[in-house]
Length: 452
Ligand SMILES: [Zn+2]
Image 1 (spheres, rainbow, N blue to C red):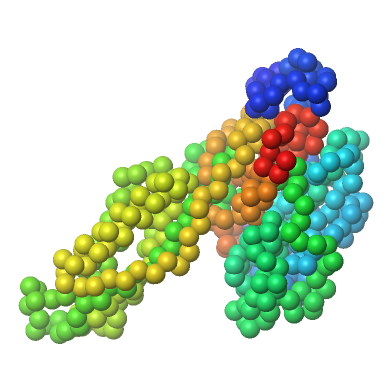
Image 2: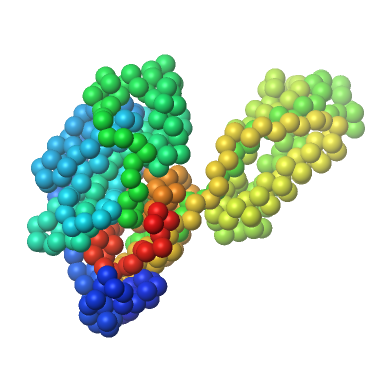
C-alpha cells in the first residue's frame, strides 16, 4: 500500500478533513505528515524487555512480580530511571501510578502505557511491552528530532493483574475516578498486606492527585494473550474493545443416595442438570458464534465419591461477548435453562453473580488509525475484540482510547513460556509510534471527544 493511500484513509477517519487547527490540511497530499514514517529501534526495546524480565526471574524465562512487592519496587525503580534518562517529568500519584511525561508542545498529552506487575508465574511481555514500547516511542521520536504538537506520556499503572489485591486494573480504575482512592488504599491482599502500607513501604505513595487529568488519547500496545492472530497468520490486531464478562456460580441441590440401590427413576441427581447446563453453554456459544465464549471452569460434586449420588454440585459459568445485548440474551437463556433442567430432575438451583462487566467499545477513529497505520507499514491487520481486561478499558471512560495487539506464540500468556517473535514486537511498536505521532500532531482530529 502506498503512502498516498494511507493518507487518504487517515483523512477519512479524521472525520473532519481540513480543519482550522490544520491549515495545511487543505488537500490529502499535504496531510502526508500523518503517514507511517517513524521507526522504533528493536534492539533497544529488546534490551529493556530483557533487563526488566531479570527482575523477579523465574525458570523458563518469565517473571514473578506481584504488585507492590520488593520485585515490583525494583522494576518500578528501573523503569523510572529510564524515564529520567529520557528527560521525562516523572509523577507518582497516591495509588502508585507512575507517568513519565515528555513536556513538549501544548494541550492534553497523548498517553501510552500498561503495567509492569505480573501474576506469580508471569511472562516477560504481558504489560511490560506496552510500557517499554512507550519509552522506545519517545526515545525514537526524540532521536529523530521530531517535535510533536502535544506532550507524550508513558505510564505504568498499579496492580493491573489483581493477583495479589482485588480488583484487577486497580491503578487505572483509580486514575479515571472509577474507584475511590481511600477504598483502593484500604484493600487487603491474599497475604494479608494492605495496599496503603505496601505503597509506603516500597516508596511509591506519591503526591500527584487522583483521579488524574484526561489525556487527549490513550493507546496501549499489548500481546494478544490468545491464539487468534497466530491462527489467522495476521501481524497486527486493531482492538475494537474489551468483551463484556459475566461470572456466575450455580449450586444444584438434589438428594444424596446409594449408587447401587437407588433405581434410576427414583433419583434426584444434581450432576444431571449441572452437566446439561455445561453442555448447553457450549452448544449456545457455538450457535451464536463470533466472539461468544462460554466456559465452565469449576465443577464440584459433593461428596465426590464413586458410589454416592451427589447431594449437590457447585459450578461456575463464565460467558463473554463484545455485544452486551447478546451477552444478556445468553445469560437469560442459560439461567432459565438451569432452572428448567433442575426442575426436571427434581432438584433445586441457586445462582450467585460473581462478576459482571459491560463490554467496552474503543474509539472508532483511533481503531481506524491503528488499522490504516498497520496497512501503511505493509502489515496484515484485522479488527478484533480483546478477551482479557486491560488498563486501556478504564481510560476509555475518560478519553478516546484504542489498543494494538501483536501475536502470542501458541496463544500462551500468564506463563513463563509466553513468547512473541521480535519481528512482531517491532511491528507492534512501529504501529504504536506512528499512531502516537499522528495523534500528537494533526493527523486525526478528536474534537468532540468524551472529555471535551
Ligand atoms: Zn496485561
